[in-house]
Image (cartoon, rainbow, N blue to C red):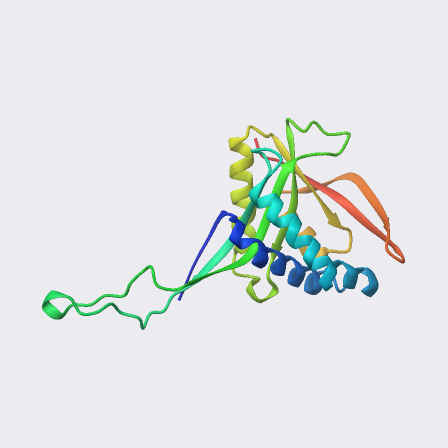
Length: 202
């Protein structure tokens, strides 16, 4: 049995957040990114860099509007019972189990020059460990992100997605997001295009 949820990331989560990002990229981007750049993005040197960046993002964000959230599963041990109490009655301990970080989301004020950072936020990351997909973690992370952004008085949110990442595009479109026409063209040994997706959260 597993309990699931979303919470604010803590400093001690940084290692698992980094590993989740690396695993999600290796699995999710392998179909449309060139091997060389993907290996550079997910290799040991890059992993060390990402770890330092996540530690800073979690422990010392630039503002209160910069947040990192994690999706967690607590794997419960249903066979673990406390010692018998008076009357010989025992019950499962709901606090037993191991919590595992299985996804992450981060957001911040939008930085694109055509956007107002006071009114529009950017979803910087939304990633789920490939061993834990299709369990609702992505939707829970997205919903929690929107809740925080509404609390911060944002009216809209954008995110950049690889144009060939059909799984992510389909997920966002099913949640009411749409392509706003902005594009980025990257040279990664061959041309790779990113598109900007947006949604109104008022």
